[in-house]
Image (cartoon, rainbow, N blue to C red; front, side, top):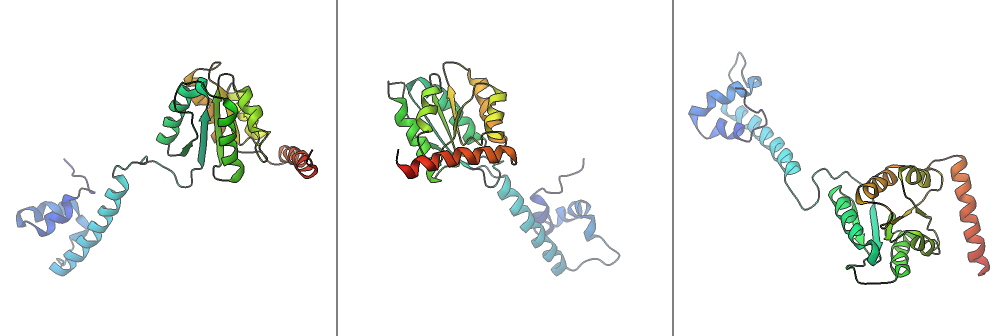
Length: 225
């Protein structure tokens, strides 16, 4: 049986017990040469091995954040009304599992509330840059999309399948996703969210058209009408 070369018992066997030294030399054939290493040389090698093991073990240690969390994942603001509350909880949990930073804007129960309040809360975080993207869930997803799009800098898109999720990102550079909890199931909603987040904004003619949308918004912001 070949021992694991990364086993943390390797350095201990070189220094703790003479009976285990022979076995460790089989694990580390690089230490065996025509001239046997001195005790000082062995200790130097052991120190380097221990340092490498400590780094590997620290990377594999469990922590509150997912072990597989990639660097630089964006912050996502998520919110809902009472109709979207159960789905919001499931999506938020899944996003945290995947390593995203999630800001929960509520609501936090199934008690009746007004969707524009929560759509605005999510949209303002995206508009200010406090969140990179937003996800809003209500019964149909329509009202939250309308409300969120009143906030400058927000491009909210109601998506109901994989194609609309991809299109809203590639063609329209959507930064807020709205979902209708009463129209789609949990599994489809999760697929939509994953596709939406994984799809980059397309350059070229799509970017040019989005720039025209932004120009319309700025025109009316300047005029105050």
